[in-house]
Amino acid sequence: MKLSKKQIQQYEEDGFLFFPGYFSEKEVSILQRELSRLPEGDPGRMVENDNKTVRALHGCHTHSEIFKRLIQHPRLLEPVQQILKELVYLYQFKINMKAAFTGDAWPWHQDYVFWYKEDGMPTPEVVNISIFLDEVNHFNGPLYLIPGSHKEGMVDVEAQIPNSGDKDADWQANVSANLKYCLNQTNVAQMVEKGGMVAPVGPRGSVLFFHGNVAHASVPNISPYDRRIIIITYNSIKNIPISKGKPRPEFLVCQDYVPLQPARDDVLLQQTNGQMIIACS
Ligand code: SIN
Ligand code: MN
Image (tube, helix red, strand yellow):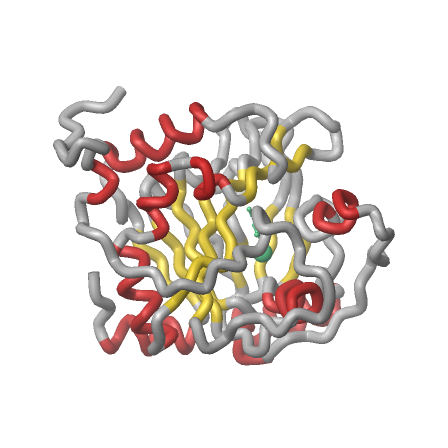
């Protein structure tokens, strides 16, 4: 899928693009089924502050054929190559679970500050893609975005949680409800005054592309509806991090810089033997 010139301009202006119902019901069922099959004892698994509800799964593409296919999907890769004007590789793959009644907040932040400070990524020209595995509605903690906030550049916030030397605690501070690099209220109020706020909602299969410096957040999910989203981050092969020390775990930050090639549009529907999946429960 190729973006029009107008869509690219809109992305550059707002820092995001939203496509309701981008993947079909059948494709989403395949992704959901794959999620339910993932192993329990995953090292990239993060729990909520209650110590039991799963908050997020990181790096699941490394042990899932379906998620590996998803990252090569032309409806994701082609627009990203157009936006970044370069070949791209996978930087991060995660599934945020935001479970019904218990899924916790994501405070206001920009993603790039993490990638700059923790990984040494040279520029913020990196694209996130959120794929809705459930309907995202006004009640289950949709992502809030501040349009145009990417144009402010990276706000150089101080780490709120110092590195402890414990490797699990350190990576978890980048993905827990107590985030390491948050925007303060003044930053957010100023950005919102200029750009307002949006919360894209839509059926499962909807897709949101957003810039690495767009300010975003989400509130806890107190509704009875799960809000599971996949977030895939693609980086240009010209923007590979210049490591400042020991890299973060591979399940959090991929170190395979081989450019991804778009697969066929029906890649999720093909069985491993090359036949098409006809029905999916
Ligand atoms: C994120 O900022 O990476 C995710 C936010 C969310 O899942 O609501
Ligand atoms: Mn984020």
